[in-house]
Length: 142
Image (cartoon, rainbow, N blue to C red; front, side, top):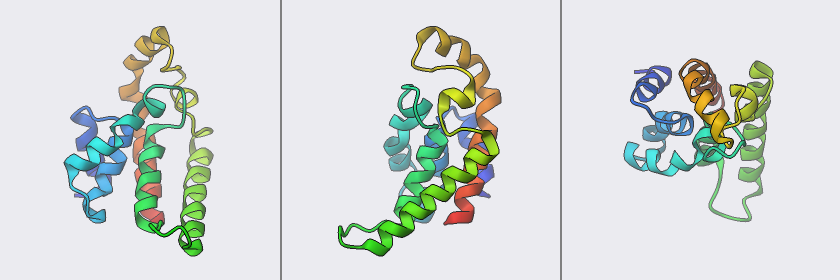
């Protein structure tokens, strides 16, 4: 199964964008699916529905970090590689969709209860293309 196909399966199960992207790559990174889903849950809906960066991007950033980052504070090369990859990921996504912010991408502010109720009706239509593009961009980078 491709990463994109895996992402579609996870979306149909009802997982959030950050969970879908991060979990699609988890086995390749030595992380079991349950742990990946738990680690990434707080990033759904623009950082727990707080009008911030898209969850699909948060999931992708976690993947990039696990691929390139180092646990050593003095590993300047790993820091540089991680920052460069994350910046490229965000820039490419922004070129495709015009923003990296969940509210801008959805057209609804999920931190506002009234807008969240209205927006949830449209999430099944708006989020899948964002998630699939995030998965494809991460695949190119890692």
